[in-house]
Amino acid sequence: MAEGYLTTHVLDTARGCPAAGIEITLYRITDVGPVRIAGAVTNADGRTDAPILGEEAFETGIYELVFDAGPYLTASGVTPGEPRFLDSIPIRFGMSEADSHYHVPLLLSPFGYSTYRGS
Image 1 (spheres, rainbow, N blue to C red):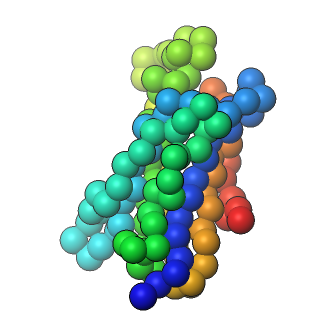
Image 2: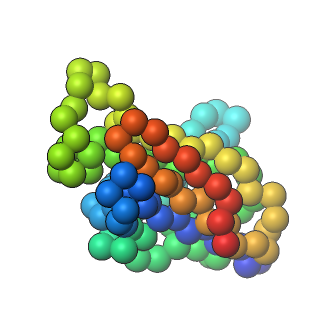
């Protein structure tokens, strides 16, 4: 059994605070396309309450986290354009180590974002 797991969090770098209330969907990328395997919403600390992919379901492979940032940006006072510059933010990444903790955060501002492999 794999001992790996996946966590994430969202920080609002423009406001300097955690981003609460962002819906996140996790997909596994397969030969037939993306397959939804989990979903969560960030808490007051900008984190999910539990790993978005726990040890019991962990498999190596290619994944995609999709952050539904549009509603959060609107609620934080960013006037949406039509279409909004940032709305749904996908981050595709690979997990190749079956016994590792992968942490993929989103650093968010109204007109840009970044990510990295955290710990």
